[in-house]
Amino acid sequence: MTPAEFKRIRESLGLTAAELAVHVGYSASRAKLRIEEIEAGKKPIPRYLDMLMTAYAEGYVPKGGFRQQN
Figure 1 (cartoon, helix red, strand yellow):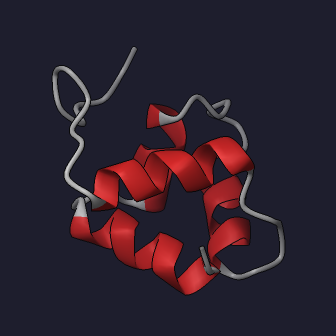
Figure 2 (cartoon, one colour):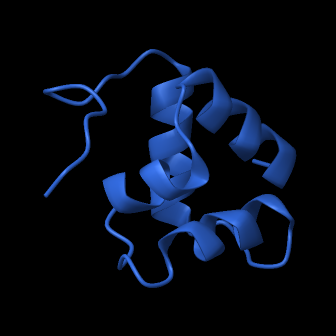
Figure 3 (cartoon, one colour):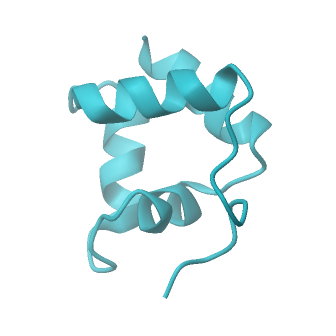
């Protein structure tokens, strides 16, 4: 998966970088920055995120949807 594909999937889900970051468990202090670094190609896409984003692109929706997690 390329950074552009990653971003396209995130946008198709209607999530901001910060929302996706929180959803996948990044700490709040670096959440948005981490996703932005991945999308800019500055950081590699971790394998688990590649697999997760591929599943989302293929129609998987987590139980409860994509609402903010506390």
